[in-house]
Image (cartoon, rainbow, N blue to C red; front, side, top):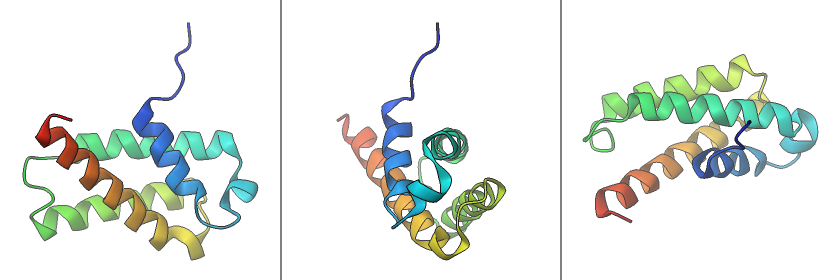
Length: 100
């Protein structure tokens, strides 16, 4: 039995596809793979205070950039994708802390 993408992976995939024309260039399968890898990297890096410490945030941004580059995400869209993914991760952590 194969499970579909998790909710956090779908949200990440939507964020990656939000940049104009990326979905058409990359395709759904590649964006889904990037989202899966990103969610794994983010959850593997999250600590209680990562949103408060710039050094931890910088490390997280670096991981995201490397994964995007590895998968051939368009270079002119990378920074916006990194910013969006970081914002999403922060929101998820806030919701998690609040028990939502």
